[in-house]
Length: 233
Image (cartoon, rainbow, N blue to C red; front, side):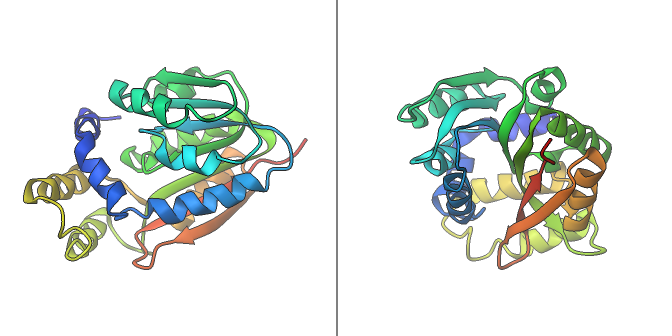
C-alpha cells in the first residue's frame, strides 16, 4: 500500500470522525455482520484485515461462537486500540502489526471467516486480483469472505467517482473541521482506486469464489458490502 495511504490512516482522529458521524456506513455494515456471524452454527475463526481499532468487528462478534480472532493492521496505535476493543471476547486473540497485503502474501493459515473493509480499493487492479487469490487461499472450505468497498457506477471513471464523492460531502461532512474535510477530499483524489461491483464480483470469481452476493449498498450508491462464499469440500 502506498505511503500516502499509510500517512492518511495514521491520522486516526480523521477516520474516527468518519466512524462517529457514520459517513462511511459502519453502523449498517456492523449490524449486517453481526447478524451474519450470529447465524454461524458452530465455532469459527475470524481474520480481521486492516482491522483499525476493531470497533466494528468487536461489536459484530459479541454473542457469537467465535473461537479465535486475528487482527491485522499496519498501525501500532490502531492495533493497541483493537486489543482493548476485543478484550471482552471469550476466545484467543492475536494481533499482527503489518500491511494486510504483506500478511496475505506470507500467510499459510486457513480461516473460516474473513473481513476486509475500505482498504482493497487503494490497490491497483492487478494487485487487487492478486489479493483475491491470496484471500481464497486463506479461506477454509465452506467459509465466507466479507468485503466492504467504494464502488464505481457502470461506466464511471475514477475521476468521475471522485467528483461525485466530493459533491456529496455537503451535509454529511459539515460537522468536520475544514482541515479534515480537505484531507479526506485529497485522500480520495490521490489514493482511492475503486472498481465497479461487477468487477469485484468478477475478480472474486476468477480467484475461486464460486458465489458472490451484495448484502448492502448505501443510499447514495457509494459503498457496497459483498459476501463471497468458498465452496465446501
